Image (cartoon, rainbow, N blue to C red):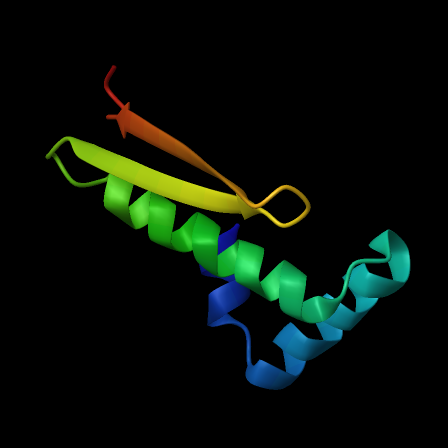
Amino acid sequence: MAEEFLKLSRERQRATLEGAEATLGIKPYFLEKDIWICWVLKELFALSKKMAFKSSAKNQNQGIHHHVKTNYHPSN
């Protein structure tokens, strides 16, 4: 899906995102971010090497850091 969206003209992309916002109630910049993330992950997973993704998030209310490390390869 990301490839088809990215092939659209910028005006058509904007219209598509605005239409999705009207239907889903999600801001266009969030939707576009998700499209780019999907495209990047698809490209990364197409590589033949194993990858490790690390994510950390800070709990704003408690000041606690949570760390997650995931080893993933699409053939696993």
